[in-house]
Length: 456
Image (cartoon, rainbow, N blue to C red; front, side, top):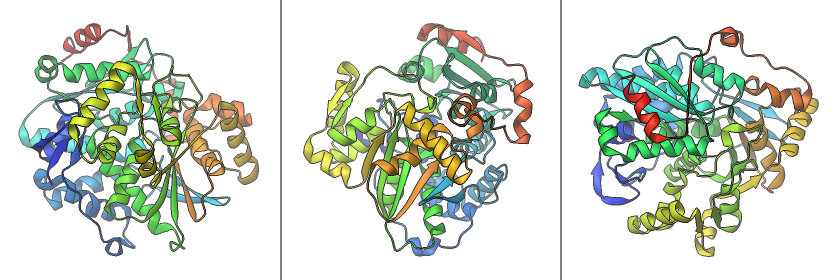
């Protein structure tokens, strides 16, 4: 499969470039030059790992053999607490797809465990070294660290917003003992962390010199890994003659874009709901065409406290019929003015696939409380936003909520909503008493660069 950048459709890349670079040199995002269709009848009744092999292999081309991919997928998902990685649970009139049974209790594990083993495979075969630099709003960092820790020829530097992730999220990142893991707490918010990473990627002298790579949600390997559970959950629905809709709590548009990719490949998804908290740039964009950056509000769903939704550029590329020059202009305008108005024609195209909703803090807490009282199930704040989204849009059929994190990662929110403390699974309880290791650094790219250089 050949890949191009959203900002230059003439230059062609292979999967290896796309995976290692993460972000194109021109600042664009990698996408396939053309997309294959999947015959979903051939995928029925497969276990999760077998399904993953079928869906992922066409995207990776000559990066590895089918046999090597099969081994890596088996290894990656052997660390999950569920045999089939995810679990679909009926909760009232909708189904909840639990994606948090991996080692760091978040959906990010599903892609990140795979990426960690991809890195090890690549670096061993090519005899190369890499430094991964990643920004996190809470969950990506822990998932990336767990996937990369202790692996040879690779270091990982994780930037998180200081005092703006939950204590459990932070401890899952900062209590490791491995020498190839470095945590940086940035005095700023997640968008600041993300901008620092993008600036370092854009500095070719620095990024090439340190052999920099990234695993943020823009990495195409993550998107294809996440598309698998859309297919898997579709086959778990007993009456799939009814339309199927997914509600996806999202800030960076990565997880919901994976659903859009699955639909483009042939999965008969009716609608994808973009479920947001008060940081609702995506809801404003989808509902009235106003993609405008506003101030980030701290909420009880910190993984969604984002204003710049990086993966949205991939959708914009489709909406503009693959006009890379138009994308360059749009992204420059967003960068310079923090704004892009989507016209009615494009908005109608978006609404063929996507709807959106927004939930306030009070609504999130009320949803957690109601679900617990009615069904004795505890949803984390992000999953509650996904669940509540179906109450705000009128969709019949099979409605599936993506539950993106285990509730124990957000103890303050759960305590506030239902006056309960949800414990970590026993395998992870030890992190609460471990010594933490992280450095607090100003929101200054030169200080961050210096810090990284001194440690490689």
